[in-house]
Image 1: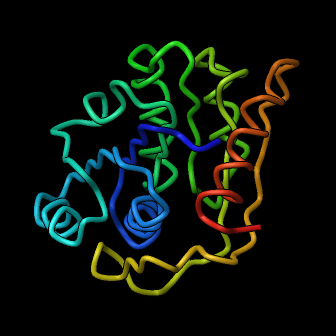
Image 2 (image 1 turned 90 degrees about the vertical axis):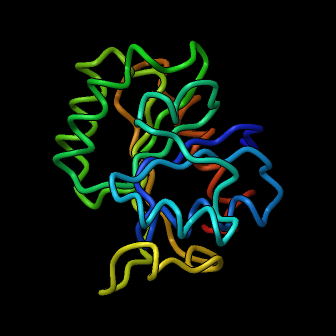
Length: 170
């Protein structure tokens, strides 16, 4: 999947790196959201995002792929809040290290066919956009988790394709 519009919610070390690498790979519209205004401004100044949103729902509007790059509890909360705001064909993914409760929440929110969890093995001890790098995810191993929905294979393939084709991960 090479989306024409990507939303990244959370612009810390992983989310900021993902957005930045996607922009460098030619994704023109990368909308970022961070609860930290300073972090968001840093991402925009670095051209890691093409525009900023004032809320997660606004960031997701019009996006073909929405990436949740926040800790597990906010991820679980956002899945439920964003489900009704997603475009009808949008795919939702995350980058949490915890999968069972995240995948369960996606199923419970009715996103079983449109969610696939991701876990890139590319972390750092540092945090915030200051720890983001435009090549942090290149070559990293990424685990993708399906929801178990009988129609969920398409979302998993789309997420795997995004990681491989856009971010050059494996």
